[in-house]
Length: 303
Image (cartoon, rainbow, N blue to C red; front, side, top):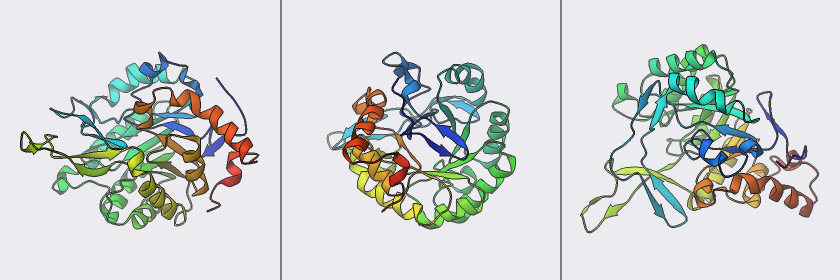
């Protein structure tokens, strides 16, 4: 493991050895990647998206490659919060990295119950996924309208005993108002962006590729838009922001840090290069040397 205090960052009083976090949905719980390299090189790992009860995920096609990215319709396949706590978290906590539990839900009660269970564990941060469809409001995601997001974050904040990070959807009506609403409701940090709503059609079958019709677009193709959204949010909130969206190189990391991020998450990059988590810390140090930057925090928010 490469270690340098030139890369250490802090979010909500939690110390990270570097600003690199394996994003939810791209890293499982880390076991498979740990067979390739020691995953303690990551500053943090965000768990596979959890729901109160386990899910099988969506039927049919789940992932396709797109120009400079992928589309996915996995459907939050996961073992459920209780199984995560019993079978995955003990192993994750042995990996010498910060652990974020990513939690989704389809109604406020599921979120709150999931939070109450996770409160009693030694996770470091709870990352609330508000891109999930709200079944009580006709299926519209909690993260589309600022007032709906404010309500769910407020309810979770009252129940949550852990530092609360809220993961924002780029499909929000207004990303700045969404970020402000979540901060006002008690979010202590934000992560963005989640995937963009997208579509692909199989012209020979004359049907959508995905059974759910729409899917989430991620990867290098979304980076410029994600960077713009992150920059806007960083300039309109006072809480730490974790940037996500097409980050695959040390240069990408520096861009997001210059835009105001406290850290970044790597998602699709883990698929295009499974060794990215092992390589990026040293590449970041080399880039800091090239740019004559003493510590990565020295360039945070300079743009």
